[in-house]
Length: 212
Image (cartoon, rainbow, N blue to C red; front, side):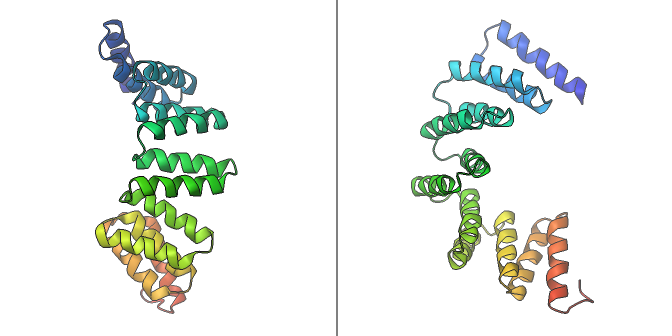
């Protein structure tokens, strides 16, 4: 595995010497460094990628993610904001931004950012799942459930949505509904140990020890 990364690094560096699509190559080089844990080198590569592709939101999001891992959280927040200005409908960027904001104690700003993004692009199911988690934490249980139910109505194979819905039903004592959700997750993802464990716990709470 290490040999593959080293070969990739060599290939990308060779491309750079030949001036081939430098923004893309710097980005790929940065991702490779990030995967092998060389975060400082990854940051330098993403900075170079931004120089070549200043309007690419994903490139800035990659830079922000590395900066966050390096402990530069507040600078990373600024770079995430720049990324979302350029590509506001990127679920991965929005959720990573929200993760960072919550980690540094800015949960309210994270909530506002998620809602703002959904006003711009309301059909981002991954972001709506994240919103439901926030709503539940804020005590808005009915809104969280409704939001997730709307997600699975339009995206019936959305595993995270079914899992979150099951978790909320279980936490609020609606064990029969939770069981149905966990069973749906297992149908979609038979290797989900978490769903199988949650299903067993919910069945035990219902007194169905023979089925757990």
